[in-house]
Amino acid sequence: MKIVAQYDFNGGKQVIAEKYSNEFSQIESVIVAIDASRYKTKESAEKTMRGKLLFSPVEINVAFKEKFNQLGWSSHKVHCDYTIGEYFDSYIPAKVTRAHREMDFIKPGVKLGVEVQFGKYAFMVYNVCAKMTIFNNLGVIDAGVEIVPVKNFADEMSTGVSYFEQFAWDLHHRGVSNIDIPVLILGIDA
Image (cartoon, rainbow, N blue to C red; front, side, top):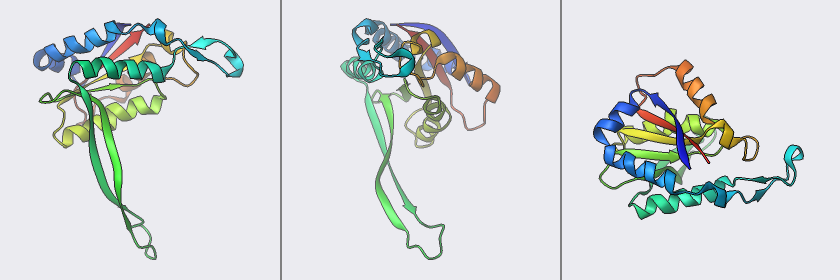
């Protein structure tokens, strides 16, 4: 695969170039090392493309995990303890202790988070505008990289997979909030 587009959100490109250039080189090497043609294995059952072979986001995510893990990157979970039911006077709150939030890839000792997203649009927005902020507030990351398909690539997956162009347009028109962290969004293609 290859990087064909970049969107600089809240100074992410400069921060990553200045503080995380070695890690960014590793991210680039992971992307280039994945042969997307190996993952065009999903036979569509959708009416509009029945029988067509599509890229499998699940298999591509597994390939990313293998490549990142080989370089010492791994997922990072934070557990979330919170109560439910506190909104109702007659309900006794129960503590929830099994919930967690997870960053796809973090390298030990490095405060750069990486998310790979081949899902719905809402997950891309959540990663950059909520999850990365949460992990920053917890002291886990200072900046992030979000890897997403460009439209050309997403068109070769099941319907509903979002894409770089839409995501970058929305972030641009949303603007930056005072709680947003620096993020570099990478658009990739097969």
